Picture 1 (cartoon, rainbow, N blue to C red):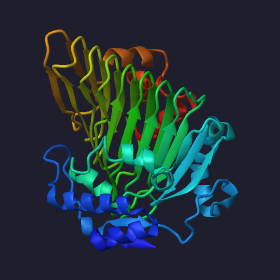
Picture 2 (picture 1 turned 135 degrees about the vertical axis):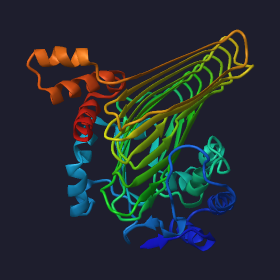
Picture 3 (picture 1 turned 135 degrees about the horizontal axis):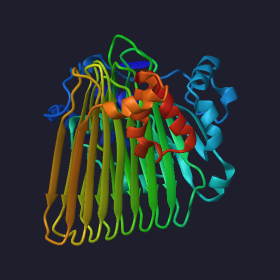
Length: 436
């Protein structure tokens, strides 16, 4: 089944297919009204979207979420196996897979269920846990914030709903995997994560799509609440095909002494606009964002982070690594805002760009604001090319030029790689070798 184009009737049809409660349909229709009234962003990459041509929903007739790979269609299972999805589950406490518009697979270790951890699809979460959902859903990211957040609120489908109870720590990560497999397909997953007080979660997201002539659209929204003295790490490696527009809104609200870490890798897509945000609401809360962006021919990577300091003695760190080659455009866009109330706070921004040829470019659009006299804000940036001295040194040891350049690039992004679990660092190395 396919639903093409966006209007009230199609939105009602999506809601009906999912058998949603009235409050969810009302949220969708309110989001659609905002979508119609909001203009396109006035910054970032240039791109064109005909919203009437996008496929907003696609699924087969089987809506049941499977908990065993043996129940997944053989062609889909083979596809996911080739991408390494089945193998990666061995290293996780739980996994969900969204294929096109629906979650097709979900599984979690029994010991997590015994701890009352909730890890399910966003649809099941809104339906089965309305008290939690109504408290947090759409509260951290407003559906009136920008056109693509409003679009997601109108047609969201697939994605994760996670609740970690107080005093609960997971030994291994949870993961969701998102796959677009159709021409002209839009994917609008919605993720809501609540890490309650004194708890800990590492969540990993993976995204891919095959290459088609027609552009695909990925407009996700991620909302994360980090409770008192809790920690959440959200790791992403997206390898969208070069025809995908990747326009994402991600934000976390961090309570007292909480810690939020965004580890964000952008390898693919035609154009990316993604700026993970931490709102440091509680005193002594911390936010970190470590990102890499790789742009090659025909790619525009516009990424960075935003840190909003509200509580006292809050700390934030942004480390951005960008690589541009073969005419690619890899830019940093970020904001740090230390409010008057955030006395005694500290913020650090470090932006490094590696430009590999004369046809590539990189821009930086930093906004740094400190509104009180007891806080500190540091920003440093470098733009460089492959060092001739380093290249000569490696080649003098018998290393071929291409391999030497590869080693220099891997060293350049070491800070990002060291934040990943071993198996994902290996995957990142393979992706970079393929794209560079």
